[in-house]
Image 1 (cartoon, rainbow, N blue to C red):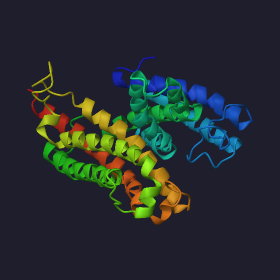
Image 2 (cartoon, rainbow, N blue to C red):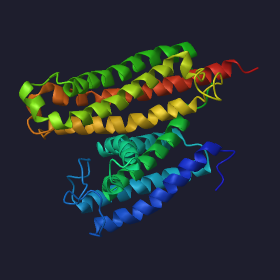
Image 3 (cartoon, rainbow, N blue to C red):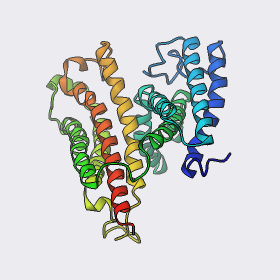
Image 4 (cartoon, rainbow, N blue to C red):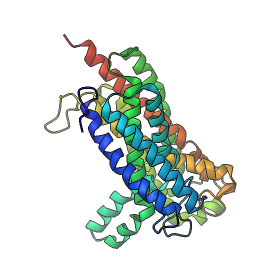
Length: 337
């Protein structure tokens, strides 16, 4: 498959991912639409969740997946033949957002957050490896596959729509946008952490004393997730600070060297997707009157309101990452002889 010179070499990997996914899920989608086994969105199946497809019967859900795979396959073929035109690029972005952001639920973020912790606990003998296997159910793995396909589609579409580093704009403008987005992307996890660490310390932030006593045994879980959020918030600040461009002095071997622009930007974008998906799931559940959190949480503002802000967190993080990448590219372009 030749993707250059009309296409960029950077399109090879996402095109291959989309081609493999399209062929596989076109067949699987049709299989599930006609009643075949293994449908991952079966509400009666162990590990089922709260995605947009869970309320649908397998015939409808399988059809949606098959159609999505067909559209993705067409986009991949067009991208392999040369740069995408605006229409297929928009289709690629919309389909990618649907697969990677709108469709999934909180399980991707929970798996990404808990799996390293569980693995470390198992290595030191504090947990059984069998517990890790219970997290990697087929429905959860399926969501990871869908997100990989969606991200690949978004990469193809955004590259065609945004273009190269010489596009209009300025490093100063990108920095200004990045600062606003970073402020939001830092504020939301801090608000979440204030409530969860307060509960861990016995302070009923946003909830009643009775509810705090009811959830006392699980407050450490929220505090653990908050710790990851705070670490992420600190790293997010680097998107608008000099230490996010040059490795700090305390980093062995790399100190003083430029940080590859794609590394922090793509890392932030990767994190923003499951955060947004999880937040949208919580918003959907709240709007439809479903339970969010433990029993009785509906009457406790602090138990559900911070999660409603997660879509804002995810979007702000993505904007901050794109602004960082744009600024670094503008600076590199300006310094070329």
